[in-house]
Image 1 (tube, rainbow, N blue to C red):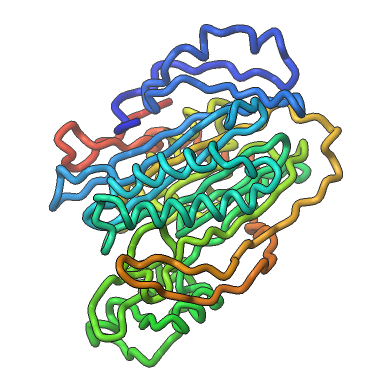
Image 2 (image 1 turned 45 degrees about the vertical axis):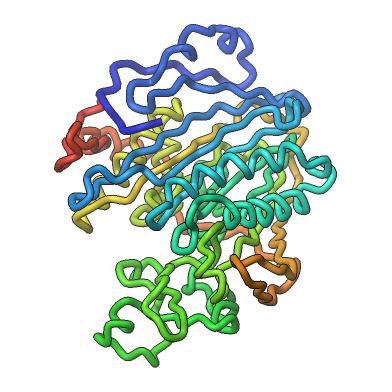
Length: 425
């Protein structure tokens, strides 16, 4: 964990699927990658005889007015949940508000603790996931952390054998890479929960939220126009949630953990859960904060990750490109956190299985510090994967990466002033 600190001085050979001789070569995997500051993690899934190969990176944001601001992102990689070698957890938590760092760390720790202690986890992962999110939210409200105007989003992936359970609260994202002929396509495993979504917009409006952009709140645009286009074109001034008669909280997401003030106008901690059965065509999945996806579409992230055999190199390149794009578009960067998990050696025995989407939205009663607030949420609505448009092949992307390696990694100086660019070629 921590900032990207230096230049990559070496490359590590990747093992081919089924090459058990190479997997026994321990030495390369004990060496820490200079950019990610992590060893390459190999996680066997013996029930289906494949291996997960993963790495993670978290990059402190650059805030020129508050250079000592703490990194509010957290991440968790937890293997062998409940002692089961076939159950593993990956999560990214993007805190926000004055106490966002404390919120993200609290939720990171408590969510996995609750999942690990839930006896129903393996029999009913959907129920366990919902219970864990709601209970963690309640505990955060009751903790010593002031979450009235602070909280965290959470994007998590639970691997149970050859099945992914993806639970999302907020606007961070998970995406899986799927081999389709000579192409590698990105399929979103989560859907950003923002007022850009018609269903989320209507839900929070029913709960009393005013939905306006900052320009609308400040009187620069007509507040009666309730159409903001799409997130890609209007991301700079997105629709936000405000209490009926106040200029707060201004959240650009419709679900989170914490945010007890925003809870009174419909921001909920109920996760949307998607279930995906892995096949040999699934190459890897990415779990990342919106610091990555603010300027990088899912397909571009998958393209970049596919260009590297070592997930540590991929994490560093994607974080660096995200950092650069933030500074190209704004005078700051968000905190950036990414986990990449490669799927190695999954056999054809799983081929032919179909992906299924499950959006679990039960009716819930939420505790809002001193009062009870009821907000109706529809149950078990189903949504499918969103397949991004893909026009360039992996080979052409790799060529463009090799020609532009000098801009691949962007790191701040030790004093967190204007960042430097390093060549990782």
